[in-house]
Length: 238
Image (cartoon, rainbow, N blue to C red):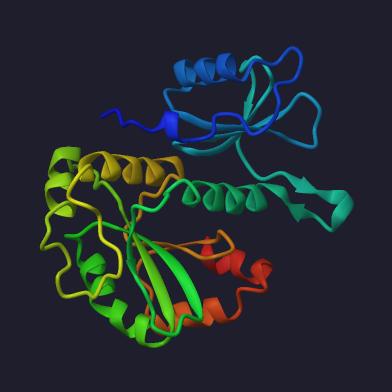
């Protein structure tokens, strides 16, 4: 299934270097690996580029002849995990593409905010949705984004998420508009693909960390209260 996504996202996050064509590199990697490339960026290593793909972050030379997958560590600065930092940045960048058309459960006295990627039918997803009012009451606003299940079809997802009665038990402050809902939903699903969100539910914290699977409200609040220490979150949030 192809989604109207690339025109709404950044292909290249920098001015093209001489001898490196971002569009050509994107096409080469897409053909050779069978993945979509949403973002290309420089790395501290001359001639090595970071690619954000539908299967996660990879590294490539300028021609797409050699590809690396793994973590890049900056040994000159305390073994800083540059790949983890790029993953966080990519998630923040992707969520910035949502625009004004969103689904959101707004907390009256907001202390924190989260993004929840979810299906509607899975057991853990349903339990998570049922507990959202508990987060709302404790000052956590939640933005909802759809994930397309492994065997789901875009048309089926649109029929569910664009239903005016969707999540009627939740006091959503923002809902998808009836006009253009299908296109907006396709864009939102494309965001989940850009970020490689496969586990449902999955949470993205304000600093860009990803937390997979069902989490009790108390667990999420603990993470949010310590969001100023992202290095400690990386092990538990991965």
